[in-house]
Image (cartoon, each protein chain N blue to C red):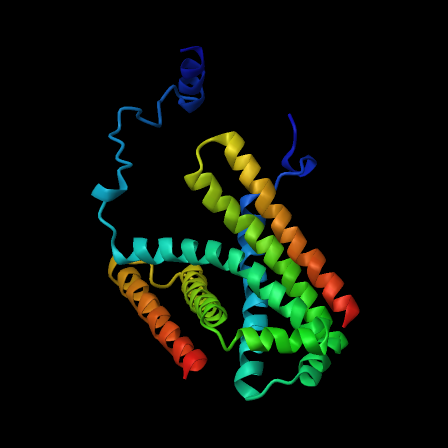
Length: 144
Length: 115
């Protein structure tokens, strides 16, 4: 209770006005929260960012091995005739593509565009659609 | 009173600028590498080794890896502080992830040194 009182005092402005009301409903049940396009675009940006970080382990390993010697290069090249290496490469490129598109959208938003409800939702939908297109193109590139 | 400048803590503006400037470098590198593969139908060991023995390419690669370390340090911190509520677990995860990012840079330097 002592801490709570201290916080209350900190939240009170110099004029004695409390600026934050504590009795607010809190809803953190994600399954009951509606996810508009902007929310989906945001969470995909985070998920793809984390995925990219771990994908780098494979990328840096393959890069290091391919530069170690001619044999190492042929070994990594040989891996790419199999499904697993192709799938990891496709996943990495797809995730990178969406993260990049989302990042470009963020920088455009930093400049003051697409900040309204309608334009924000539209740009989020377009970003996700472009991500899917890039993912399909990457698949065609790797498998065809 | 301790001034902000006297502490080792980052501030929001610094994070904001760092995140975006590093993103630009990483984007340029990613586009360059994908462009390289698209432009060369058959990559040989000689060509691949020749690319990374170029001093400019070594510099570009190392700078990009450092940028990835700075970028992920901020980005993963944002994700961890939002979803991992337990402070000890968050600190442990942050430590491991930042160590991984530092390892990417160290390994990159060693590989580039030998090419």
